[in-house]
Image 1 (cartoon, one colour):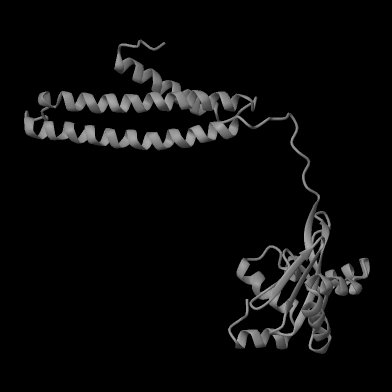
Image 2 (tube, helix red, strand yellow):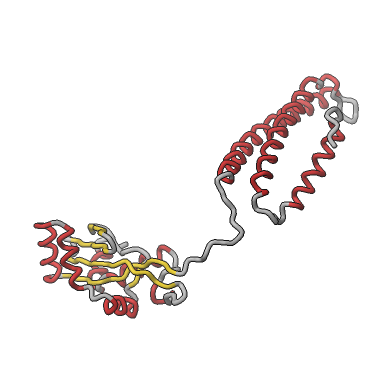
Length: 257
């Protein structure tokens, strides 16, 4: 029990209590207890801040009585004042810890813990390439976009979507992406489950469709590049998305992804 008058005894008891708490918090049988622990810790941190300030003040107020082991007052006094300064600095850091702990407690107060974990996701979303056009084929769609707007071009390209047949072809050939590929000088339009990209500069258009993939089935990493680094994915997207001559032209002009 705290004495409320003996600093040495109460400091020792506080140290033992924290050791016990460090051991006890290795596992929480009741997750609801965490918020209460945070609240008590926040109170403790505020008290610790006060203790540090009071220790600093005590060193300053009593530095006239400070000596080193050889009886040198100048050295002892300087050390006492240095300790006070460091204690004040420590208290400042405790202020920052209190702020972060208070934010943690605020967030924790919004959590409702359930006895059973949430069901794991069984699906994820990917984008498959429906159609890619360049040259004369793309010119027709680009003219339509210029005259009637991107939405008209997107609706027109939907005619190349044959449902499961298109999905299967894209999966087999690796035209599957975590996000629709795009690059410099390309325009984009997303409407519902479809995503249109087009470029007048490179004379091509492409349409992608959102597709739900079963996590149980998965996708081969080596052909899809879904778990590679961002730089590698950018390189793969260029090769999947564009014919070789378009990719080479972009790289030549310094416009590749």
